[in-house]
Image 1 (cartoon, rainbow, N blue to C red):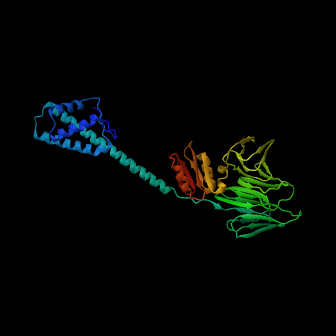
Image 2: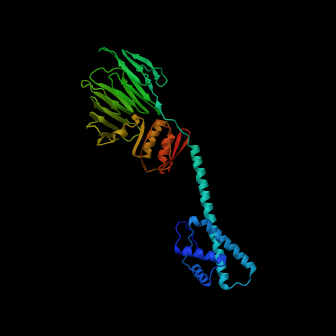
Image 3: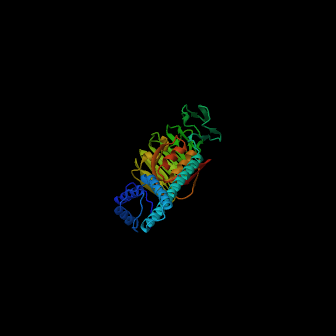
Length: 395
């Protein structure tokens, strides 16, 4: 006979009847017809024993009492009819098997629960928190002088041929220029480290927000027929309108020309494409011998081949979420997410296996990295272990 332990919550009629007969047999109230019924059930080769989880304790206790009674009866009487002897031996064997199965299953699940608890505790202990980035940048002036802006005092921090660099009370940078056509200025470079961001107002009133690990090369004053800057990494622009002096952004050999508009450029070396997303106005993209005109809500994508592709109806909120202090993932792969994490939290990332799941969600950038990981781990598709400045990504 085969015994299968199957925890469930519903007892069928046959099983209920079996328990009733067993109780009657134990208490000596079973009739001869019921003994025959019980014996026929017991010798049914197709019958499997199903013990519901909520009856498990009562079942074990019942069979334990039956086994004790069997032993007592063997000692008290040597004359047992063959039917009873066979039945009692089978019941004893069944009781032992059921008891062992119950103990084995209990031990397995108890041990598994303990193991899972220990593993989760170890993972929690390994998961140190890492603080978010902040306003950090280095300004390198045209003459090579370096100014660490996050520690510099507020006020004028540099002057160059009629132009001034001023650190404002809000910790950001502003350029002011004098009047006259004889102003000669060199180019300065504003660089944000990994874990840093900064914003600057240029001499013409154009405002630029710099994302982590980015740089902006700009003049202290704009002279000539065009206003030109150069970007590496990611920056969001709100360009001051001046139709007589077009604004041009150079990025990795590509040119973005505007008159007055709001747009975002993402051009990190570790990303597959340069992406220019337009929020307001219009921009003209030039790359090699190709050109494209963007409208609001569109994104120009330039891959390694240099061809310009236009993506319409993009989620502009996602494109500039970083500027608004958010992480915004819309069906993003874990590799893309971790590139953003590595730049903002200044971490090294290691993948143990390739993870193909995609994630959607929004969370503040001003929280420790553990809160971001908790949100992603809630999906059950990925887990993280932090060791110092290194994050290991596991399925």
